[in-house]
Image 1 (cartoon, helix red, strand yellow):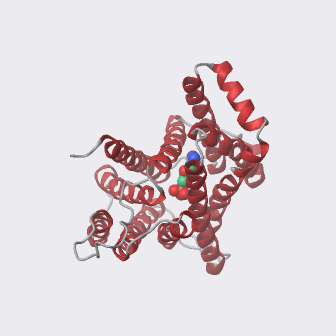
Image 2 (cartoon, protein in one colour):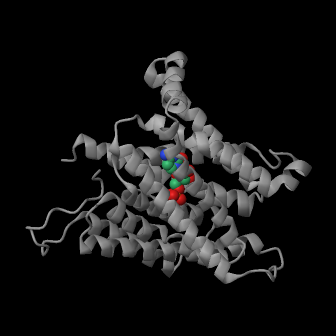
Image 3 (tube, helix red, strand yellow):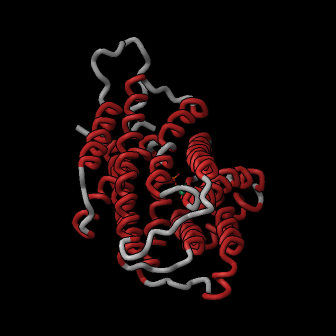
Length: 339
Ligand code: C5P
């Protein structure tokens, strides 16, 4: 029988995988089929703002109204500047990750970038061991590398398909100013930022009993201004010419809502489960979105998808089910949904 706590964790992970896949399908649709021309950095800024708004709503609900929520925020934000400052670290890292993503994309092809982005899986596992003192068995390390290989395989070929779909009616541009080493550096730094930010946030929410929603608010207090400033610095010319909301329609608002909602679910997953299981949910969302794209956009599913999915399924099995040959004297390593 699956107990209540385990059920809660599995439901959260399933929700994260599902939202992630719907988000990925929508991004594919806006880029390849609808060909919407929006300013990505403004979308990121709106996502952060919406997360802050949603977090405020939860805080109002939890504390019993707007007044008590304001008092709580005054106590934890204004009167605890050092505590709030701690959350600047993951905020800056997530912002850096975003910038590194765009820098790497302009210096290497999308399929290679997608594979290298999955480096965040082994990086996350390494940081969980070194920073959170988590124990992983050899079998679990192996399953983490299987997950990396499986997800990387699917991502590589899916990105290649997306690229050909987007460019099918255009001449292939010759990128004369691409520098692969810059792209490689950016993608490795970006993956590392994502892993450090996630593990750092998990450590903060698990080491004292301040509410998760206060921690989220402290995070967004930084990420909202950072993302708006980054948007104005990077895309000032486009924003001035076409407006901040240029290219927005109901699909873009759906993207913003889904991404904000998934950010909040990620924070709950980090509280009740951990960063490694979050990676498993993300891998599952990649599989689900590829299957959905097959039906919706006639995407090609080939040997790579079968191999990649098999590797991810094996990795989940090996991570969750300890094989009998392991020594029973060793302390138990963590399992899929353990905190
Ligand atoms: O790429 P990665 O899986 O590290 O992305 C995690 C995402 O979750 C980031 O976009 C980050 O903004 C979001 N997040 C959040 N709230 C948290 C922790 C992460 O919105 N408390």
